[in-house]
Length: 205
Image (cartoon, rainbow, N blue to C red; front, side, top):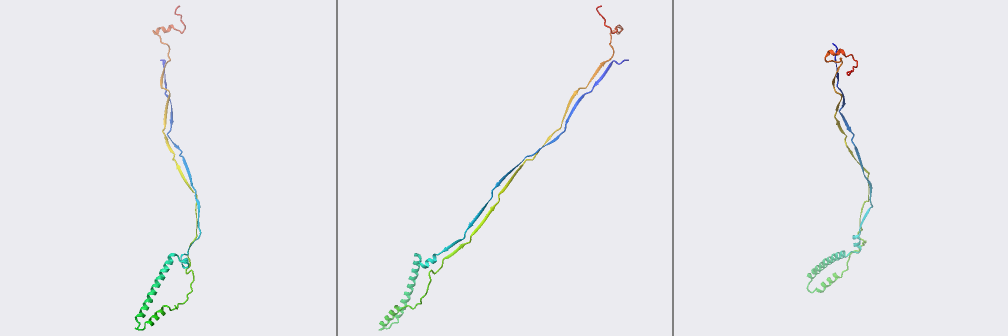
């Protein structure tokens, strides 16, 4: 028996694009700031200092008003002490006087008052004291400070980005079935097939 049908299967056609997952690293940034503090040099110098106090030396030559008053007060006290001693001595003489010897007693008192002193001469030098001298040692110092540099670094870390994978499916041909009739023509009724030979027939004639 002759095969009348030809069946053809059309397969599906597709294209598959795959993009793998990946990690993307972004580089960080770095900034550096530099600041400077200036130093310097300082020199300090102080010469010797001399302090001279001549107050006492000047007072020993030409006393001040205050010192003169003090000296005169001391001399007044000394004179009062001496006068008191003299009066006490004369009182003792008067107590020991005898009746009728008044003239002798008075002569003794007058002789004591007019007696010449027997003090010794003393040589003195002026001024009696020297000046008070004090001094401070000199000073010399040097301070030097170098320049200072300050570094301030700002470093930003890099970021890591994850890129997920991707699958792309594209269909270029869908599946199908082609059925093709490969047999001869079919006539109804079948007996009429013998009359047709493939020639053209003029129906009007």
